[in-house]
Image (cartoon, rainbow, N blue to C red; front, side, top):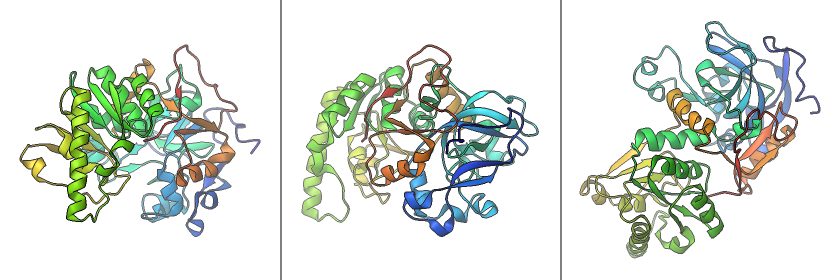
Length: 414
């Protein structure tokens, strides 16, 4: 472990082996058991690929699923059958170390951030529709191996973005997956405009803190749903006009399997919640930012204004949605699905970070030896925000080469 931050080769030359946190099928289970340190052959870049020396990595819940082998083991698809192992990690900052044939935009020594969408260059959807529509589309470091919990990672060249100079390595590794997802949801899928009113579920969570900031700089008004007054004050600091404590409306949450009497009571609470939203926003929301799913979706459809949009990227409370569809068709509302972001969206979003118009929100930074432990914290819901992992960096604060505000350090959560 003491040698993790040390690399014997110079940019342009790869060492034969590297240290990585590896998941294998025979030990799927709790993250503290599934993740194990191994010395493994360093990947080499193919055509239009790049190998990056990882300086810091970000922790996301997707690799808790990878460790558990649920809902489907990642070992059965992507490039895993070829390699027989999984190296996770879908957020990273680092240094370009070696480039493959055909790469002209990047060179060894460049400092970069990595976005996590991959697709085959041969898919026609990549060239004119959207890489997210390509049949080969995968999330790097989850649906593929060679993720960021290793000294080196292998990515497609199109995944690279310039590292914001005013951020440290760990700050630059903390935002990609959640921020780029929120950007696509609001800016491209929901067509956020100045003057729009937006309801944001889980506004103090990993997605919500960025959705709140995007609304602010776009000239839109947002109200966020949070779980405490402290988190409410945080999102007001980030630009929300106000917040709603979800604990005051527990009865509106859809559990599934309610009796007619229970559902009637739930609907009444949803009505009360919608009234509070309208009072704080000055009208019904044009957009509802959804990622909670079953518990909140009936209220989202009810709350959004006629011809408004509910944009959804996940379902943390359950993916089987049950809602009164009359409020959808009679009021001509729209439901829009969204998944991560393409390279163009990630690039435009990253420019807002470079300009300090949007700031990362980071809870804690841990050493490389804590990768398994960090995922166990997520598994046990004991984390209080985004966790970054030092890999090539030896201490927090390294990598910052320009003045500017860094990440907001905060305990966050839905």
